[in-house]
Image (cartoon, rainbow, N blue to C red; front, side, top):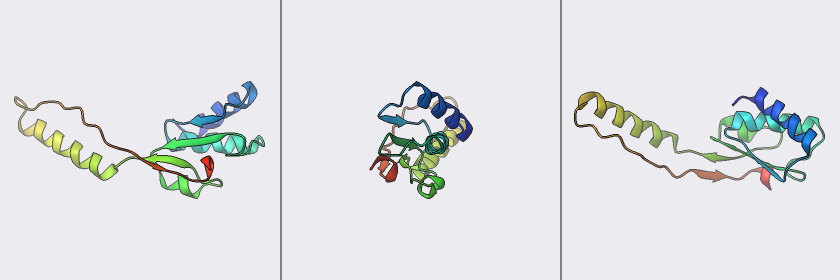
Length: 112
């Protein structure tokens, strides 16, 4: 889940034959993939489309700006805090919940 791991994975993908697209579990991993691909002469997005997840600040600032999925971080933090406080205040009645949030696609150069 690090940039270094992304570089290693990209090296293996280049050696094995590139797929049309790569979706990474987070942006740090994707930035490592991007770095290794560019070093290998692979053009992004012309040769391979690349996408990350989390939309960290560096995603927009990379050599080829990275397409990413943005999570509603404020909403995630607020709900998590409310659930934790409820569990602490009401341990006998607190019910665990499965809450889903809608991520937002932030399209940038790595997929266009």
